[in-house]
Length: 170
Image (cartoon, rainbow, N blue to C red):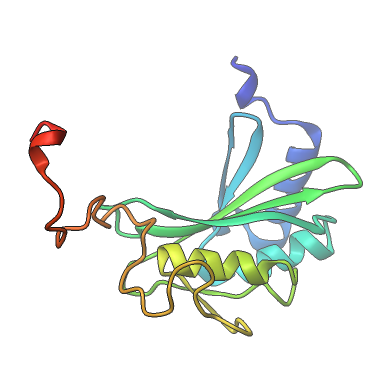
């Protein structure tokens, strides 16, 4: 059996506690490379993250970022990287949303450091974090018309007239 499919005792404890609290069909899980990854429906994401913080001591939000998978029914999503510093245990929690309803609840009430991470995710992927205290662009211009990390964003500016495509083999 490959090493990345073996669950650690800490992973199994997390799975058992989440299953006990939210039921077996409330989420899925798999070990991706070195980290256990939980996929949670967006309706339960805030409750699951609160439970992980309060009951299982995942008190450190290492990172939060967006993801985009064009063609899937739920093509946008967010990934929360959590760390239980006391046990040295890390997990990932993912949730998915549709492009038309790209909204998730804010977790700034759980981890104040999520403030900038949620703003960056909104700025680049267009996922609105409902309840966020200051949801505005953080790196792009305020009037920027698109979300550049989505895979449907053009790689080149189609309005440029100063570029000669023959220099690029076209």
